[in-house]
Length: 171
Image (cartoon, rainbow, N blue to C red; front, side, top):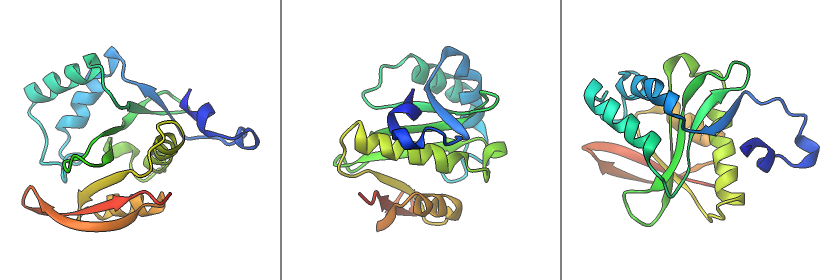
């Protein structure tokens, strides 16, 4: 379990909100929901069509990824809240952490905790020296999240005809 890897012995009494698990075949329906939700996809190029979302979801569940993609599940009810993943960034030089959360789980600390766990994993288990995250500069909620977990603005670029803010891990 990821949580056990990340917590030191003196921290095991911490009550977490979420845990991260690998994708399961039963997650396809929720992935489709995530990929077709207009609120989730506001800053990600818009919602996918139902057909594209189903294809992408099945591919994600069936693929053998080089880097982790986890489902963010609520600790109490095991509910699918979203995903967090690592991939090679557009620049080809950095590893990027990405996340998507269903709207009903936003603003409750789930993304903060999941992203914090993922960054610790990147540092302590994957041995990465840095991780970046890219978000549209007008996505203020995502910017606040990245800053809350200790990432800092490194640079701004224009991609997909939109200003993007690139944040970097602080270790």
